[in-house]
Length: 280
Ligand SMILES: Nc1ncnc2c1ncn2[C@@H]1O[C@H](COP(=O)(O)OP(=O)(O)OP(=O)(O)O)[C@@H](O)[C@H]1O
Image (cartoon, rainbow, N blue to C red):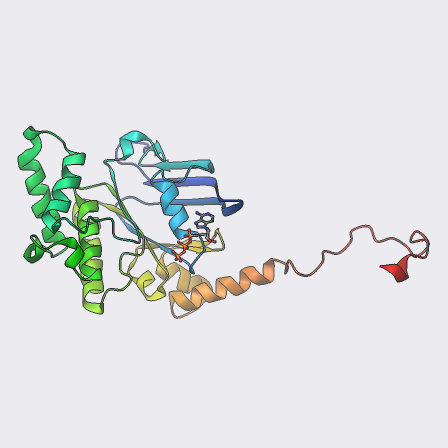
């Protein structure tokens, strides 16, 4: 979607009535939301609420989706989006029997094949390794790295080619506090200095405070779409975690408990029951 002056897009991602099924059940229910460009949007919600499914749909890896999902002005999954999106899955996508540099060389060659791009690929790899602070481990086998280091190799792969949109599925899980802080500094640097749009999922609510905007998800539905400040003010709570819990309680009050049988809109009079009351 372009703005009125025809310049940069107003939204990096736009979803309308997005519904996604996995197996025999609907996992995402008619979602409406936007992701602004050049900002960090946090996708937050409890385990199993559908965060990974939403990210997979965004990058075109989820087949059974209906509704509208526009990504960088194209329908999700469009072939031209492949080099414009960097996607980091929860499990690091690295080859354990290759060194850090060889992993990056392999993926860089897929993104920009051919000898004429050799210098650009080398510059890209150096850039990505510096971003994730792995320049001292370039010759280490990926299989011998710690969990946090392997996650950072995976992130470096996603940074190759300077994607416009970074989709990061719980990138800070299992990292120590210093590494977590450094990664968030990197995310803010990418958004502020390179205009990268970042969609990052987490079920750790304190990470929400580091995002510009939040999408709170529960049971496959958007509970709220707001800034951290907006959420706290709207719910009159001191933290995003408290705001989330309040919204969950409000949603539960607004939705009848499915275990309670619905009231019969046409109750039969005793005469119509023909005396069957006792057998019900
Ligand atoms: N391959 C699959 N087939 C059927 N259902 C699936 C499949 N993968 C996931 N699901 C279901 O879809 C729902 C959403 O899962 P998803 O992985 O998107 O959640 P999540 O919010 O990312 O969870 P987590 O934070 O634990 O990673 C869950 O109920 C899960 O059981």
